[in-house]
Amino acid sequence: DTEVTQTPKHLVMGMTNKKSLKCEQHMGHRAMYWYKQKAKKPPELMFVYSYEKLSINESVPSRFSPECPNSSLLNLHLHALQPEDSALYLCASSQTGTSGRREQFFGPGTRLTVL
Amino acid sequence: AQSVTQLGSHVSVSEGALVLLRCNYSSSVPPYLFWYVQYPNQGLQLLLKYTSAATLVKGINGFEAEFKKSETSFHLTKPSAHMSDAAEYFCAVSDPTTSYDKVIFGPGTSLSVIP
Image (cartoon, rainbow over all chains, first blue to last red; front, side, top):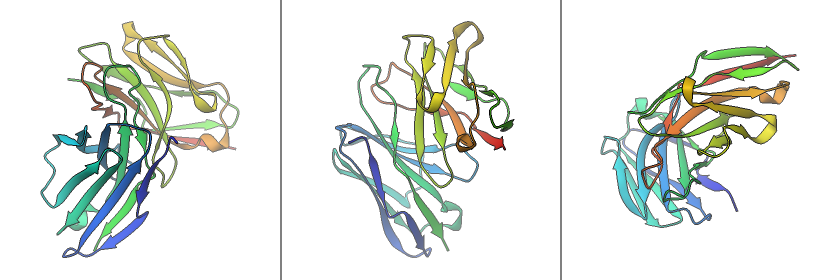
């Protein structure tokens, strides 16, 4: 299984709502990532988890809260978002170590609209 | 610090013509290099990767890329464009000395294929 799944596919939320994005992989990868992608732009790294521990937080506002319950799951909790947070949110996973097999596998993304 | 540039934010080719998408990188260590493709409203899919083995790398869908250290380049080519190749292409670089991937993406090149 070389697939990363993300739910939901689309999400519309108001600025006072609380919602969560979910990501799952069963490739045994121990690094997982959240990216934000605006239209016609490259993905911007938000968070990296390595062995279920938060390794990188790219100065993301606290209204985004990541969680890694186990090695297969990654959540992104959303609260009090702003309209400018509307974007495609991508999850990815990869092997760790320096073995050379470093490519990231991406999920299809969640299209988030904040009203 | 690592960085990636992609010459040409938009490239247009005729169906059956050569595809050439340019990528130049800067890195303080020999890098890992990747090309990803993104179709509309989808996640990113790995086309190919360079990890210090063969300098000519073959990928999926007939694409290949050549690593040229002297030119710090990793251009992507395909001999004959197909309509289904129309998509956004991202070149990316990562530092192999870290235990996980912090991938730096280039700005992307949008490929159009004219029938």
